[in-house]
Image (spheres, helix red, strand yellow):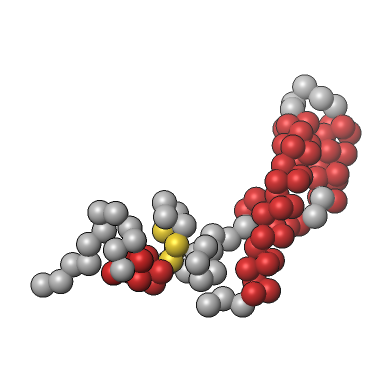
Length: 101
């Protein structure tokens, strides 16, 4: 089980990303627009830099929804390999069979 603080930090980042997504997209569009003057584009970059760091989507990390584990994460199921194995062994994931030979 991951530390509660790490799980909460990820949740906070998720909220920040959602909150600042529109503003961030607007500023990025201004900064990339070649038809605008260089000063306006530079001001947009400065405003973009003043936004909270944790509002950037690339700072988010995938975590298992059950355990909070950050590694060996299956995106399709949103669980870690360990949780996936436990759920599969207990028959909670349809079509998943534990192989043995």
